[in-house]
Length: 496
Ligand SMILES: NC(=O)C1=CN([C@@H]2O[C@H](COP(=O)(O)OP(=O)(O)OC[C@H]3O[C@@H](n4cnc5c(N)ncnc54)[C@H](OP(=O)(O)O)[C@@H]3O)[C@@H](O)[C@H]2O)C=CC1
Ligand SMILES: O=C(O)C(O)COP(=O)(O)O
Image (cartoon, rainbow, N blue to C red):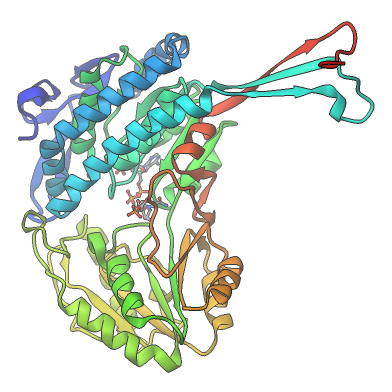
């Protein structure tokens, strides 16, 4: 059970502690932030509302710990990460329990998130050993006018302190996807978990604590992003920010100093279905892509663009599958569970009402109880409706009927987002041309958008992000190149 057994030291009475200098502490603010269970809409947990002084302490501790960590052999860093991954998986039960209660993630998916996180950390350790264990050796005579008298040794060095800010929908997985790469590359880390999901994240941090990482190397500050966010992201002690979330990321990128930024933001992933598509395959992927975790994934299918001649058939197949989705509490492992907050449910409802007023066809009756919204397919959506462009982050999926592939590509590229897209066709040549034309970070051919497998590059264009994630890219992003040039008194040619 959460907060008990090996986790008993992370809680004080009713309030979870924050993690600083290798210890679980109570904030001197005397204030806490409540986490409301999306299903019961009652306070489930409380976390510390950390102060600016506590942020300063954590940054100072991280800076000191990083220096020693950078001198720790790479294989030892990897060994500790493997240990943390094993502990994380061993304690998947209580961590998943928090995900169910804090963010209403269906029970099975909650377990999968923790297991996937353990695997991610292990893979990161192995990949780090491979890619950080080698550098580049360059010689000068390949550039015009130079003799072979300079040898350049280029290697990857840590950045310093990485600030990691994940979103509510993957509070554990999108935290470790930042923590793992930061640590293997020799950085220290300050985590600011999302408020909804903070307790799951604190349990995950404790697994790193139990693995025996040095004091101060990993830290976790809790509190509302709107209150301590700016202080954290503009803190002079931060050398890199890795953020996943919504528009907040755009604001952060404008305020942050001259430091590397990794931003994974929103998406409006389009699914283009051509007349020659396997409609059963397309329908299955549209339902899985559009409705898993109730549509609260940045990579969810968020708009279907289907060629008119096959639209009736596709909509019918999707509708049949939507009607089979189970709706209810996450504890019962239902497909559709309550969305994360009441304000999120209100926002989704606003998009639905707008579509209704402008004449969209409702394939199901709209139904809502509290934060629970029944899955809804909206047909005959037109570009003048908000839902054609905005990201509901909920179980509501619009279908736009298109006359041509060009119209579909135009709609996709007119969006300010550019995360992923997908295309369904049996013609691989057409699929490649469409993929090239879509202004998105990834295009999936004959499958729904998805971030994983976690070692694949994952990036958004336009307002969907800066830089690229995926294990290898994140490790590289959290390092700098350092060159040492050996200047020889005379040119030297091997075997020359
Ligand atoms: N591209 C991707 O990989 C993903 C994108 N997303 C996008 O994220 C959005 C939903 O996630 P959500 O968690 O609500 O996103 P938010 O942008 O609201 O929050 C993300 C994180 O930022 C924190 N935060 C809030 N304000 C600040 C601030 N001023 N400074 C620093 N940090 C701050 C939040 O903390 P707190 O909770 O305390 O407010 C949370 O930890 C959707 O738009 C979705 O598309 C989500 C997942 C993945
Ligand atoms: O946070 C998200 O929504 C993602 O990064 C998507 O991850 P997924 O494709 O594995 O659900």
